[in-house]
Amino acid sequence: MVAAQEDGSMERRTSANPSVGLSRADVLDISGPLQDAASAMVDDSFLRCFTSTMDEPWNWNFYLFPLWALGVVVRNLILFPLRLLTIVLGTLLFVLAFAVTAFLPKERRLAAEQRCVQFMAQAFVASWTGVIRYHGPRPVAAPNRVWVANHTSMIDYAVLCAYCPFAAIMQLHPGWVGIFQTRYLASLGCLWFNRTQAKDRTLVAKRMREHVASATSTPLLIFPEGTCVNNEYCVMFRKGAFDLGATVCPVAIKYNKIFVDAFWNSKRQSFSAHLMKIMRSWALVCDVYFLEPQTRKEGESVEAFANRVQALIAQKARLKVAPWDGYLKYYNLAEKHPDLIENQRRQYSAVIKKYAEE
Image (cartoon, rainbow, N blue to C red; front, side, top):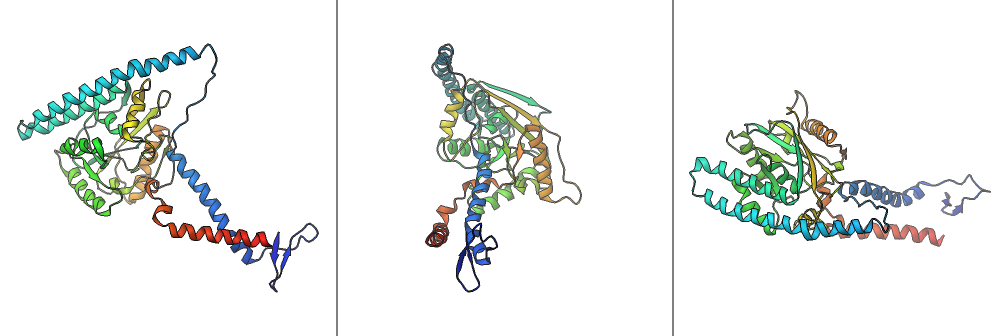
């Protein structure tokens, strides 16, 4: 190892000369690579929260192959067409029934629209051969009350609405999902936002307070993680749902991955492809736990309240709590600030070149 002397000369550390130490300049020179290594470890820990479960290998042999092949045929040529037919017919009935609600008196229209949305959610669950077990009391609409749940996929909303209709805070999506959101779910009081627009978040926060304060509104559901996580971890809860002065009702959702991984990686897969994957599996198995309502204690900060509710959900759903902000998943430093990345690369290259020449 090369060490700097006071006169500026360089001396190599060897077994015969072990007293040669590192100067402050050397420490500063290697701080960049060390920082890069630490960042790599942080990235690895962060990305674990958003990694799909890999299928476990099994013992392939001549006797088991026919059984596996039969399963592929049953799932893709028998179950999948039946499930596709179920969701198509369910959607047609839903659209017709929802159109009829427009002719109902205003005081009856909301209840009818809620039943239509619940029917559509049940059609989705049926198309997945969903085996959903609900634990705890059924949610009841009440003023100053909000429900929060961990988030694995957009199907979370269908799983919960199949049991009880909810209004939700959602990212507005493109395509047929966006049409469904704005045309049908908006009638329940669902609120949309773009996570990259600060103005949208401010407007949603205001409307969220108004919704929670109303005694006639549909129960409000919030996913405080703000993004889909792989149902193995639970990332940081954002404090918006806990700063309303309302009672918070935790909901823990745990999927059994024995048949299919319900995690939706939106950066790699469209929602339509995600639904097709679930519909081609054997079944969707899930447990939903409605936990005891929580109120903010005297002197408790909003962050502490959010962390306490997060711990309750994580414990019930057997999730590992991770200290990361899920919004970092959508922030690519290399795309937004390429000059910073290039500058780091040049500095690292200069350090390596310097030591190589010595």
